[in-house]
Length: 418
Length: 134
Image (cartoon, rainbow over all chains, first blue to last red; front, side, top):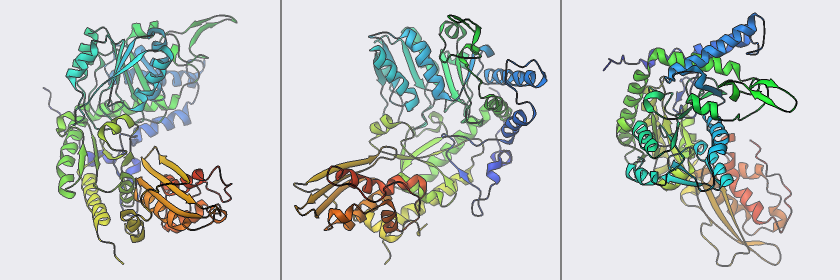
């Protein structure tokens, strides 16, 4: 096994201009990276360079900056392909985010492959973006949805999964890492089982691609999606990876310019993949920014990113119960099974009140259902608080979180002063 | 921290006024913020003269939503509908007396919104119940 050079969050912090901003004499303890990540200077510079030096459209201009724009856009595609070890850059479709990627698959692949009575197998962990598109498709096609249940620690029940595969689903779609609980799912094993049952597999990598090494060939899945803005890239960037033959067989999702080869009044010949799926002028700056972001992450090293976040999870799971003895922490308690997400509730304090009190100390966490309402129903909670990490997070952020949670607990528990 | 969650808010949250249900309410309305899971059920007893002579609520949620419901039920108890329809967002936020950030306005105004909907088929509301930041 290769030696992983540890990541130095204090040195890396200098790469993130937002962390230089003053919040009442403190830097921001940004613990909401699962919602969106801060942007390193190389990403901001890449976006600015496009906008200020060569902001031409792609695949059109027969002039210098048009060719520069096309080259940078396609280089970003190659960078994204390399980042997830896709065998061919033409298997990368640029989209706005993971949600759009899943919708693309649901509309394009789904409407041509899911028929009445077919089953789509999902899980109780899914983000709404990997649930609602399938609900709409199932309603439209009179197809069935089934769900792999979780245990009380938020891990998918693999025995139930095996049983549900006997329904011979056409598609299995599940998250690589849960945004609600941090659960890291055994993707490779689940893909093998799904393929053995004759299903294709879509993996939602929104919380995985930014945080651990992803190799789509090793995972063996058929579709892999992730959001650029959670991967240190700009908002409006994201990627769908699918095996070439699937993309070739899929009809276009959106139609218009760019996705065509020849257009006549009554018929059109579509462009090759992936451009067939990129109708209209894309978010060129965002795609170029995403390319810079994944190159930055590769420079840091995804093994190092994972080791760093695992360390932060272990530290948090250890520290918070010391600071607030009655805290309830949801999800896997073993840092090896958990991505950089720690979800919790304090007794008798609504997570929104927790988040508001923390905000007063320049600590940003998420409070709510994190776009996983069915998961929260399963947990029996309307809402939870969530701290989530990225390369720039460090133990000091978590120390501040722990101390602020203890103060919040004292404020709500303490006797009212008259 | 303390100025935001002043003692009165925490008192109302821990010991909400008018918390419970009515046996034979004239109006019942549920309200919720799906985003945060704040939830209240408001019950009103309304006399023939148009006086809200009984009021009760149950609910679960953040301190701001529950304290706001507690304070609002205090405010409307015994009042004629003609006065209640003059209650606007500004009044509710003034009563709370703490700075409410835009993200928390829905929490603060859940009770007013629920009250307005409870009375929707009886009266026309006069005051603005829009989410206007203070």
